[in-house]
Length: 349
Image 1: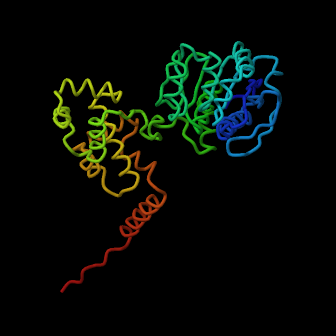
Image 2: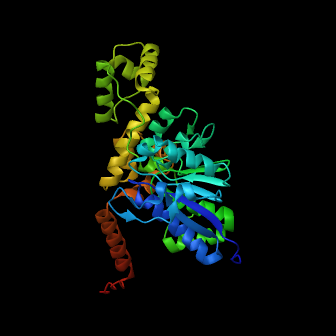
Image 3: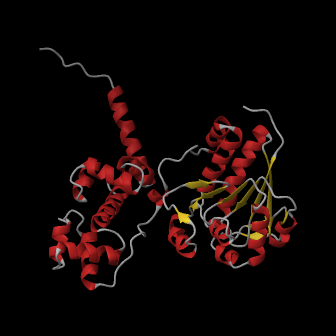
């Protein structure tokens, strides 16, 4: 563990409607690092130095006025929240972000805080991410930004953007690791009971919103058929016959109307069906694979890795209900207890 050094200055920008966890996660990580190494001096600021109210109604005091921060900090961090759209229209706020970012070593955001960085022009020509539900909006509003929707956090030069809410903790741990080494970051992660590097991307948490619906009645009926019958024959020839189109015409029309290829759409629909069964049912992974049209568990595993970044078994363990987890734990404990019972000798005759 390294000796205590001069603290790095971190300025965290908050505003009314901010997400409380976007602030609390990074602050706890940085506080842990400060206790171990003297690593950070954290200041929470708002425009005008006003107390802010989070989206959950919790009032948060601040250390000062954003405009009064004279020297650019080592790290400038902007949190997200439901009212980020107010911020992207606030020219004074954006001007202050540009001023401090110009001399900061790092500029970071959590969740929809990326919209404020983008509105200030700080993400132009860079890769970035935000909450999975807002990635499409970020890409549409700011076409100069390359949005990576599955990433937990994205580092591009001096900018680091994190996905939704709790990923601010992931981001802060990565910054601590960069500044003070893996052992310090790992120790803080253990203390906070979080991964140093979270397995998988944020797709594992998202609802299936990436594919748009279509106004075409024939294709709309086909999409309903796919959702209701994931184990049916959903090959391109079969779907083309169902829509009374040639295969080539069908594939072109489907891709243009829906925004993805027929094969990719079917894979996503089957993964979505499998997710629901893995979360709520007790069927084996093999049975789920058959029921959802994958045929074999290995085929479903590869699809899950492509779409969600984790295999089906790991997905089930993370997202099944607490009641199911308790029942499984009890069954395992019962099995161990039974194995430990002494065997009764069979009497000889």
